[in-house]
Length: 521
Image 1 (cartoon, rainbow, N blue to C red):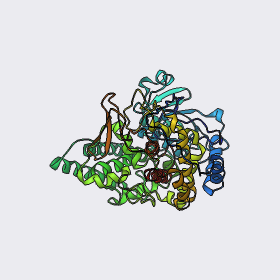
Image 2 (image 1 turned 90 degrees about the horizontal axis):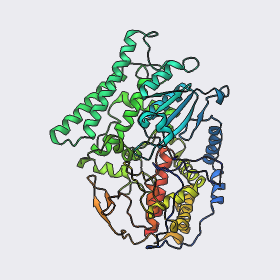
Image 3 (image 1 turned 135 degrees about the vertical axis):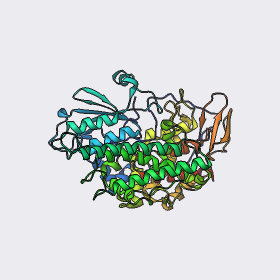
């Protein structure tokens, strides 16, 4: 089982696209109670679009990186299956196989991934779904007790638990792999060892206070205490960072194991506390800000970094539900894409891009999204048509995971036309793309009538969801079995970093919304 879509016949570039979905050969249903529209077609062909995106600076760069990646080289990337870190390393000499989650979301996998990249330890990758997103393959559950992730094989021997794995790798790969990332009692002073241990203990306290604020239904005085406790712990973290001359907890020129342990927690804390509690962290703690900026300047981290929307969709399947307060509703709606947050021109004030990702501007982000869409269009079209199909069985805990959903083949042609218009808009901008797109798409979305047995409700965060009283299935995508549902289904399942970078994902979501608006009017 793999979350990777099969390669498109249009290009040899291996592309993974779309959020939290297991892809396997699927039966298709022709559900004709609400037939798909018969669109005119004024959009360029996929072949022409491919030629155009390959001619852009971004397209050329992504093609070159994909070729490097296939040989085990190039910058870090979620699609990489082999990492050699230099021409002197041979694939036959790789000692580590890294088993990580297919969605590139698991915090424990992220930590191990970062350490491998920072120390430049050659490794192979095998991807396995988390339990909340799909069924683990039998070969993996036979290999790893309980199917735990992450895991590594080092010289054929299996190891689990991320902290133990990181310490093992740090102790094993010393020569030509940079400085040690965690003090050892044999090589460092007792003070250095105790400092590292105390910082790991402080990270555990940070996790505890984060959980108490976000994942418990606290109100009034209890809410204020939870917020105060978290702020006090953040102050202690900030103070610990102030004790070194550089941005890192243990000093030096690069992050240590301690830094890696913290960053996975901070990334999820920042997104979830903002979404559910309106708690803003960045801009309040000077040393933490410098530390986050330093991480966001490292390609290893940017390759693993998840955006807010992906986090708040994924976190409840791991940590349980977050509990929102009224003060957080406005920012939560922006993160979720409501109230015109995912509209063109895109406003990223609530979630600024890392400085390194802003250098090339919006056009480069649009072209990255176009590259990913065009390179794998056949599978993307089929995937989007799940929105007008039937939910899969069994269902899984993660909100947007539906690995066994059945696409509605009646909508393939219309969805193909629509996504070619989206690709044009990503390449040229909506001003140039709208005139032809209106001819084909305007008013074709459908009436909005729900299918039988489905009813509309509102959740605690004020979002509409839909419940089937016969099957017990629920979804946030309106089960209308209509054309606009296909585009919305796709929009809501674009994830970071698995599908593309943060800026590209936001551009794709906005341009899919542009298409949804055309379909409605």
